[in-house]
Image (cartoon, rainbow over all chains, first blue to last red; front, side, top):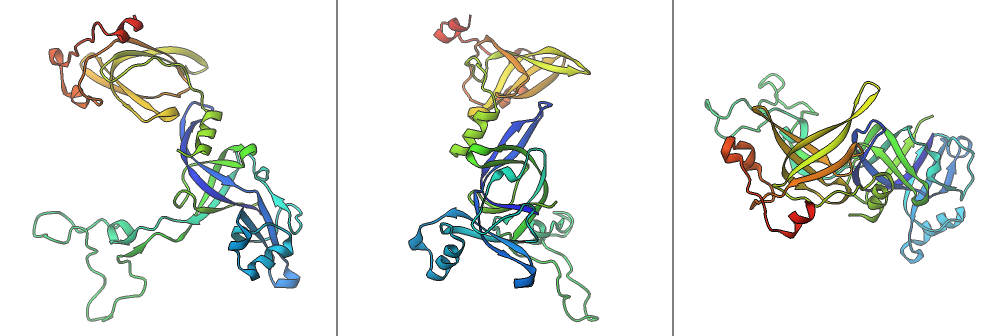
Length: 208
Length: 124
């Protein structure tokens, strides 16, 4: 496994070798510092804890500052833990850079999706709404319809799709192609879109 | 726009010298097309319906009459296969997006030419 923490910068479009127009996302990824390495013997599972984006020392709580000090790194804004063993041999306090990935590879990206508030079933679960606009309908065009049988279960089953809060959840997009890597600015350009607003933190993973 | 996005665009997209044209102008776009292994240059002459966006991702669409059928084509300004853009005629229109133009046929779809303007002279 190889992983990095990044920040979504925004979207633009480039042209591929065939001259096709492809939309892409620009992510500023790394440099990340290794804050903690958990091993199976000591912690019961193996994982790597990475930190990204420097932050002022005065803004960090003392216990957290001690955690950074142990690894000998500058305090970070975002800490993420990646399960599994890192593909390269790494030590505590190491700096991981974008050269981990190469152009043409496929990566998975996880991020917090945009919050959409309370939404109905048509938007939230892709229901098609109730029938037609006329022929006896007057106020139920986007309603869910029946939510189950009547007197037999005498209740609504758990997990029935209804309206509610939508978005603001961790979403993973798999197999995004790496179009370009800009080493001098720590940028990675991925084909397609990634979850979340601009400036949101993202976890970029490659399973190998 | 974010400076880092601008940086990516400047690195991987090429900005070609294109003449100054506006909505209502008649232009010819010369672009390359691939036919098997051969590459040849094709031209598309028509009226500019709209210009949209800015910088490297700006687009413009051109409309021409191919016999009785109208054909509209969208071009991106940084498209690598565009070889040349020629301005044939400066048109006099009152809107920046002349969508109404695609409904007009025959004599009505005539756009007055902008004359005596310094820009038109420079093009010629």
